Image 1 (tube, rainbow, N blue to C red):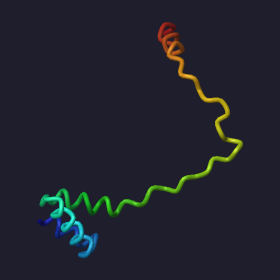
Image 2: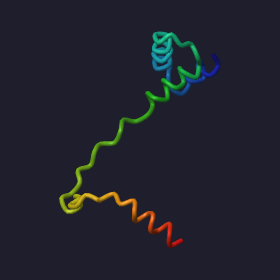
Image 3: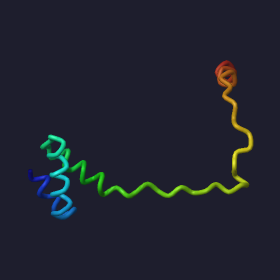
Length: 76
């Protein structure tokens, strides 16, 4: 309970209330779950995709060759 009340200082009361409501909606009443929900809400959105310039595009797909690894193992 103290951890949840402490989260009000950093995340604000509306965010903590929403996290508590979400946890209760899932039938969970653990402080760890509420703090996890708050942490997921704080995480930034995934970064935008960057388009690869034409000069850097892969022209020839690499071929998996396990024999190369076996050869290296034999030489060491």
